[in-house]
Image (cartoon, rainbow, N blue to C red; front, top):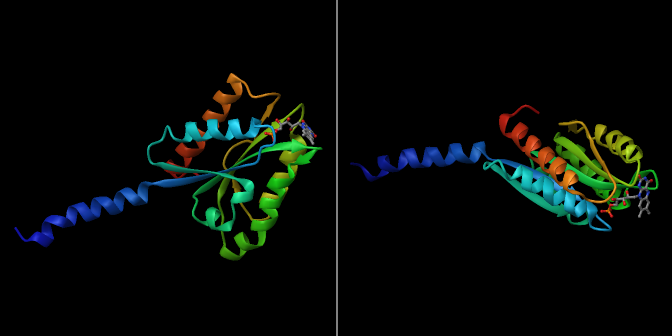
Length: 171
Ligand SMILES: Cc1cc2nc3c(=O)[nH]c(=O)nc-3n(C[C@H](O)[C@H](O)[C@H](O)COP(=O)(O)O)c2cc1C
């Protein structure tokens, strides 16, 4: 058999596998550790899907390069003083014009931690993200109070649902 020919199926399979892989970027900011736990739980949920590559980054370490490499983005943040926390606002401020310049249109999801509300952060984030424009992939999830087993389950379910949707190409 010609050596070159026996390699063809392997090369094709490798190409197909790569095109099936999807990448989920999880960007978070956390002061007390609550949002960090929510973000990690969401990542564990997303990793239930074997063809998803997840990248978990603090907001101050993330930028347009990471957004451009992603197929979807999950933002995990607290509501502070009725608004989204400052570091997430900084991330959005830094990436807004560069994302528009690159024509990035990504599905996104919001996971918001709050003491007793969270709707101010939700409204502000949705307004900003509509300008990119990014497309909502799921209803925003607001989790109130300290991190709990129920929060862990809800975050993991959100991460898994987002990952499944990305793989199915429904966003
Ligand atoms: C400065 C500050 C302002 C806050 N403002 C609000 C608020 O307006 N509404 C609310 O529901 N919770 C508020 N919280 C509570 C946080 O949203 C909540 O503790 C959250 O879990 C913090 O997550 P993190 O510490 O992981 O960033 C505030 C907390 C801080 C420290």
